Structures are given as C-alpha cells and as structure tokens.
Image (cartoon, rainbow over the protein chains, first blue to last red):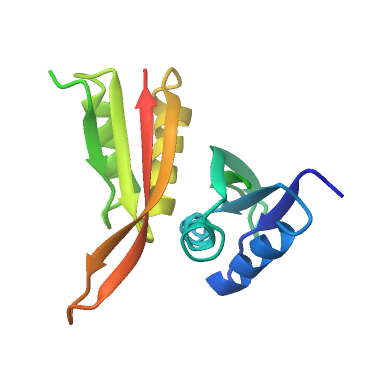
Length: 89
Length: 89
C-alpha cells in the first residue's frame, strides 16, 4: 500500500474526482490532489466536497502552488500555474 | 498603514491584479489574495506571476481553502469554493 496516492484533476465532472479521492482513502491515509491551469478551481471544489459532504474527518495538511512549463502545439513554451493539495485522514 | 492588505480576484485581466498586489506591497509587508469559484485559478496565476516576474523576494506564507454560501438569483443557496493566499515580503 503506497503512502501517497495522487488524483489528477482534469476536465471530467467534479463528482468523478470526488469518487476517486474517497476511493483512494480506502487504501491510504494521505491523498494528494493535483491540478494545473483552469482545473485548479475544480481541484478546490473536489477537496471541499470531499470534506463537507463525504469525509468530514479529512484535513488539509498542506497546499503548494507553483509554475510548470509545458510545450505548446507549435513548440512554444507555455507557463501554467499548478496546485497540490495534500489531504490526510 | 494597515498590516494586512487584501486583493480580491474577479473577472478582470490577470495583469491588473498583479499590478494591485505589487502596488499594495509598497505600503505593506503582507498582502492577502482572495478569490472564489472559477476565479481561484486566476488567483494562483496572479501570485505566480508576482513571484516569478516582479517580486522574487515574496513568499507564500499560508494558503487556506474553504466554502462560502451565497444566495443565487432566485434565493437558492449556492456553495462556492474559496481560496486565501497570504503573501509576505
């Protein structure tokens, strides 16, 4: 059993990520929710829904923000903001 | 001079909020960037641009997330995620 499980937030519905987080907590005491760009808002929604509706015992242990450089379609570098929210039960 | 200055992130362009943060640091050692809903991603962009391009000496002191209940157009309550990023120079 890994100590650190990661859920990457993309463009799917919020509830599918909520389900991923809750499922991963079955096998771990810590889950990290990661997102970049516009998905950052959704990552916060996911964490808040997990805590308010499904697992009130879960605490936000740490939040880190940063910048990642990815390569765009024509090879131009694009800077994207990132977030990593570490949850612990 | 207030010890805590707040910049609320809305729908304007990222650079106008970057300018607000940099300006507020002229009069304070601490600036709090607040946003809710979809503006959360923009708040992280603002902080990252301030730190990477304009004020590398600024540190992220604390990040808090939460939920706020606002009243929608027809009186129905709407839950919105919130973020507060405390910056310190």
